[in-house]
Image (cartoon, rainbow over all chains, first blue to last red; front, side, top):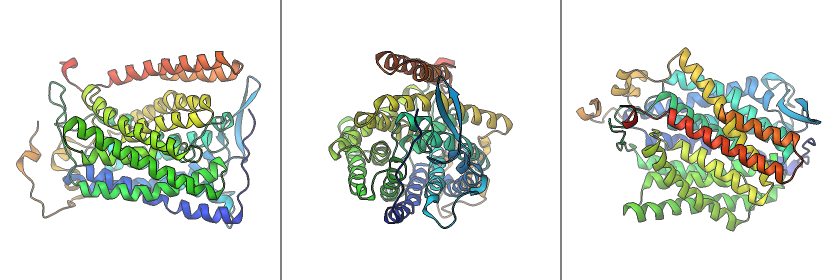
Length: 418
Length: 53
């Protein structure tokens, strides 16, 4: 394997890239609104505060150790010499951002990583909504921002062994979305379904989100953030010129739009009405899927990637809930894990497909068992699920002492134990 | 174990086999092993319902 070398950024490209990085918090805010809107009203303040705390924890942990382990191409790293090849497996940078140039653009990958760690940490909140304790979600974020995220980020973005194979993931479909989505899957397994979600026969009940406006507003914010995320990631980790941002923005928008329309058409055809929350999930799934190859695929390919991502969301939501009895209120597993894996595979059509398959295999065969194992251990040390009383009362009152909507009437059936 | 086993097969294929049909075959077989492992993990984590009554 040969070391990864990326062209040095010009002053102009670096400045443009910096502006793109500053858009990433909009993607995070969008996902937070979607997660809060898809949860129940008595957990809304808890969902928003959990997101804020999780982003804070992710930033601090990434600053302390994550950035050092992620590293960047051309920087010091630990390598294993196996079968005649050097397998670059983890960064060897300084902890607490030591060694970063304070006044130069060379710190951009670390800033991008800081923003991305927060975005990845938001994803599991959607699957654990309505039953995940605030402290437990923060503790789980420590494992993600200090363990699984920087590990895979180094392999794919930091000049690690996957990057050496030619693995392409410009906007973080794998590094951010699938890592977050697989953590979300682990959390659904560990927490179990919400009370009343499945009846004794195993059939799911509908527990609709409390605010479709928040969910759809979140989609608009996510779109803006993803434009910056994909463009900045492509410039930093694929080595494309800043002018490629035009194609990336077009691909990002086309992927999201075609995925949302795909979901709208499928739900209309199957159920007779267009499902707003599924369309929102489809929009985000399109953003996720197109992220991997946003800098290398043609716009027509971005449309196809989006159309398939939308279809995958509809059928995987149904499959996960009906057949596998996964209770994922925010749709994090289909939107981030399934669509992200599809995006990585689709990027292989335009790039080195064997490397993409190896990347997918690594996510499923290494990152999933790792994140599941770490969260399982955490759950053994301190249960992650809120007590029964807290779930019945609502996390707002139980953990925060006040609700998001104090004027709302609470009906008796909200407290019924089904 | 099957998930991890599949990934190790992929690593072994990259490290030990020359690039070509045999390497691709091993990677595809390893993905099949992982799919089997994923199926088992999903079944092991089914929420209580008809099967467990």
